[in-house]
View 1 (cartoon, rainbow, N blue to C red):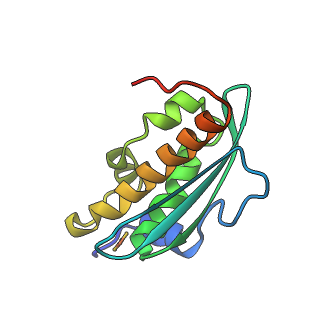
View 2: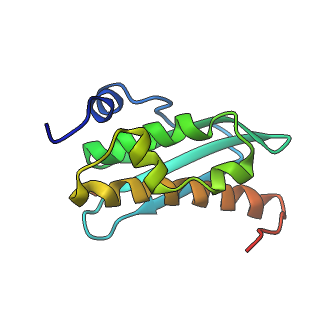
Length: 128
Ligand code: FES
């Protein structure tokens, strides 16, 4: 099979799907080649990501990647979310086909963009 059961599961039943009202950070990224867009919302309390949600206009792998990414950063310190890699997301999904790896990159970038937005809004200097 081309896609793992986990990919299919997260594609069919995305976790934390939807817009978040008054999020503390919002990140929007896109892939110019395929045109897919991903938006990630985070709520932060005491440096912990207490809630996260996403909207993805894109392929099944992008939806599964964003769904998995939200589960991986929920309840985690902001710094840990920043360290999330697309590789880790793909591994947690039991792999993605090689030509679909870029879809998981969107998830990594969306999380980063949301954290950056949170940092910017709160005047927190981002470590290099
Ligand atoms: Fe564009 Fe998957 S094909 S993100």
